Image 1 (cartoon, rainbow, N blue to C red):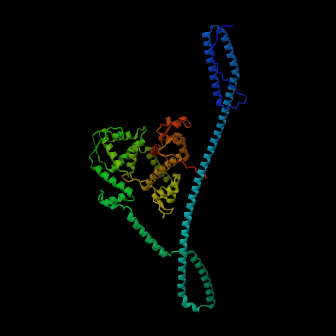
Image 2: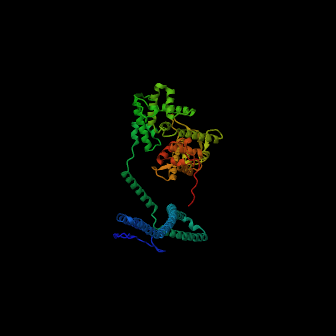
Image 3: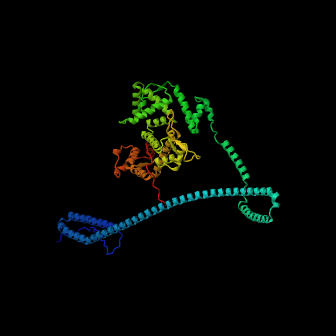
Length: 587
């Protein structure tokens, strides 16, 4: 229908028709970008179409109906034309995603293989390190053998020198005898003389061959006389050098006039002691002198760091007991402690004991007096052990177990004394020690034998008064035999804890877990029973045994402590080896 009006020439809509042929080969990243471009083109088309329709409606309202119909149809036709492309793009996108997932799975598999290869290489490195350690041990052993062989060679060389000297001596004696017998030779039978001459020549020939051999082997050997002179000169020079460079040894005889009792008492105190022990003795003498001069002790107050039996304000009287009185008082305290049924803490027991013995009014004075005395006399066994238990540096079970060990040893010796004479042979003494202490080494048994009176010149039949080994003097000092037992116990405890540290394989400042400590204890001492292990672990981590997690419980890993603190806590209690350590497998 003609209206007689002319429509303005509007810009045609811009449509980007993208066709993707089959097998397009586009990269996976380009497909989403192409989809976006299609969407942008469609959006631009819709915008232009709306703008044209709006313009026509404003100028020619009568064409609105026909124009909308034509435009709608044209738009639908364009959309239908773009639908296959959209479906194709979706398919390509899915295909690219599948390829990406496949590539990721392949990379994951390669990473897994690389990790396995890494673990194998680490195992190979560990194996090489073990072989290196084994070889180093072998080299050390070979060096030791070489040193022994060299010492053997030196010994053989010296023996040959002595042999040459003996041969020369025999030759001289032989010549002397020949000269002595010469006056009567002419009266002998000529046949006998001829035979003797023949034998002498044979001996001379053999001796000459031996002499030539000796000269060949020992032509460069220094004569013994020259060697001894050079050795003496060298020794003198070494002593002079040592005296010139070393620190002069103290002259302990100067203490004779200072110590109460004069030279006789000082010689008694210094007998059998080294310089370090003599320093302790001298400090004890000085400290005891100052202690006797004090009439009062100042109270330490009521601070939390002050032991309960010393909490007091003001002055406390010094009771000034003798050393013997203090030792007897401590022995009585131990007797009462062992007889107790209801165990209280040791400091509380100590103060209650003093209250019962001296009354509440004098208990504090005696507590300060006893404490100051046992703090000074480190060399006295009774005082030093009581002080260690009182201050928590040592468990009282250590003292009790040691006393039980000594009592058991005396019982075994009494049983071996079939005649009930108080005497044992050295052989019986050795047998009792080995049966009572099966874990001690031969060297430790030898030390105990020597402390008991054995010496290299003793025979197995020599008799020993075994009761004398367990006697004490008036100040509570034991005989050297019992002292050696205590020293060996402390050395064995230190060695046991050192083996535990080596088995854990960590530094002192690092943390150790409960299961790791339990496993290390069972490794170095497989004969430990479960109750003993729990006792050790409870002390190490300061946990009551009832509150400790069961073995295998996940809570075990949460119980940790610094290794140095663990070893210090175990040092306090009675910890010792129960059975022999299993031998390590040969590499």
